[in-house]
Length: 68
Image: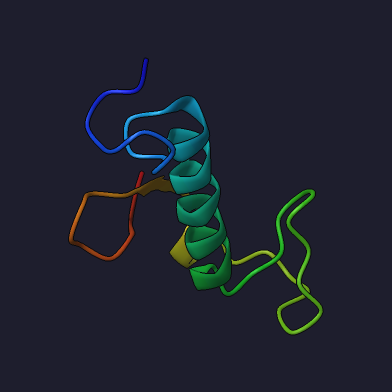
């Protein structure tokens, strides 16, 4: 049984949670102006340890932040 929304809406369901997780991970990856491991960007081919050697922190209603 789904909770937190209409049946089939994805709100509160495992599929809805996975969808939100994928969207947030994608947003964080696009904001990183660097390449790191499997996250390779042709427009930013090098690592940028000074600005991005950090954890991505996402809070509802706020843009992603990077913290050591």
